[in-house]
Length: 350
Image: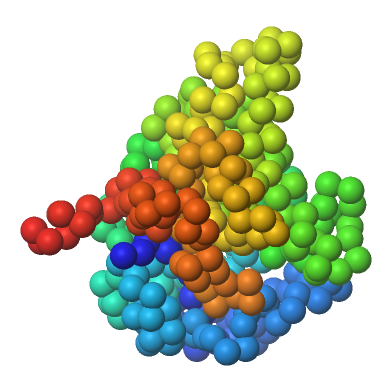
């Protein structure tokens, strides 16, 4: 049994956008389509495989859910570029339309589909408004953030109204890399703008490192003790280093993180989870098992396939050296707990 934390269902087609958008954006889409934020870096056909499709629910059911035995499948969308828009009202309209499209077209297609709602990070007031509109829907299980080189790191107070609403409604936040080539991102890496997609794709964890440090050391989890974050599609081998580094530096510079009451590592292990994809593939598989142990054990990981992207990971990618108990936790149990999904026993009773 699987819980998959990252399935990129397709964006609406033109006629579907027009159905869900309000004016003035309906007329804009009708004439011009979506706003382009490309910067000249080729994005490899959106990252999708040529032999798979998430354009329709039946494609995902046949090629993924039925093939691998999914119990739940979190729809995370394919709209990361909206996070780069400098126009918050446009972003709010697009997020609202995408959410309504997913609720109306995808959720009824299969009871295994659950979703992460998109919110406009550009304006917390608009994001909270969308959370309040949709919170309580039984199959909305998280809030979607798109995280790359944001204008403001995710731990800073700018975002705290969103976190208050998320905690109040018991909705975790799933952070996913935004499209790496949007013009609003300051750069494609910590070193500056890289030449191509290959280079930018290799350094995506840099952004997550910075966001984790910001979230923890700004005291987000002291302010919102019920808030949870999942970092999806950024791997996880980097996380042990960041946790160790935060603990070490905090001991000497704790006056610069005055909200903290515990070591940074304790906040990460209590509040943060990591998607498995793209799973690291060392030549010696036992090294991956060691990294999982360094991170805090299999409880820190949740399976994510990233379907239908080219670096999709099927469940068998987890090394058998982890052991059956650890693999079961990663493939199913951890996500059930994180998203508040029915346990297998509850599912049988229902």
